[in-house]
Length: 140
Image (cartoon, rainbow, N blue to C red; front, top):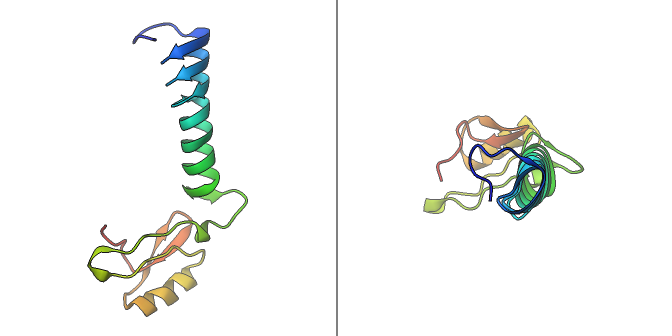
C-alpha cells in the first residue's frame, strides 16, 4: 500500500498501488486498472481520470454506464458532448415532490419554450448543451 510521499514504482500491484502503471484495488498512476482506479487513463468499476472506461466514471473523455465528462458515451450521463447519440433523450428528472410535473431537457430552445408554456412557467434555462423549460431549475 502506497504512503503519502512515496515515489511511484514503474508497475505497481495491490491495494492502493502507486505506479506509472497501477493494477489493483484503488490503483493510482498514469494508467490505472482496478476497482476504483484514479489516473490519466483509468479502467475499472468506478473510475476517475482524464480518459475512463468504467461502469461509473468522471473525467474528460468517458465511456461507461453512468458517466460525467466533457465527451462521453454511456447509457446515462452528463457532459457537453455525448458521442454517438442524442443527449436530449438521456438527461431527465424524476417527478418532483408536491405533485410537480417531470421536467426534461431538450436539444433546442424552441422545444423547451413550448414545454414551458404547457407547464405554465416562463422562459427556459440552459443545461449543458440542452435547454430546460422554466427560467430557473426546480429545487429537488
